[in-house]
Image (cartoon, rainbow, N blue to C red; front, side):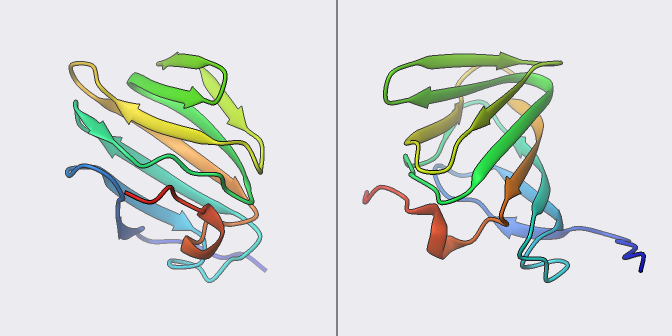
Length: 121
C-alpha cells in the first residue's frame, strides 16, 4: 500500500545550533521503525556529539562537505559522494567548511534517540 508523504517533520538536531533535519520517513513522520530517510541542512561550524548507533547510516552529500570522523579515520565527503557507517561504529559528523552541507541520511533500522548512544557532553 503506498504511503504518500506530503511534507517532512522538522526534527531538533543535536550539537551546535543551526542544523535542520527534515524527516520524510521514520519514527516521527511516518511511524516507520524499519528505516528513516531525512534531508539534512547543516551550516558552517555545526558539530554533533560523537555517537555509537545501533543502526547503519548511509549519507549522500548533495552540496558542500560533510566531515565524518571515526575512531581511526577522518573523511571529507563532498558533493556527489556518499559514506556508510556500520552499526556499532563510533562516529562524529560535522560541517566545518564555508557553506556547510546538504545531504540525505538513511538509517536502517530507523534512527531513534534510544539507539543512537551519543557521547556525554
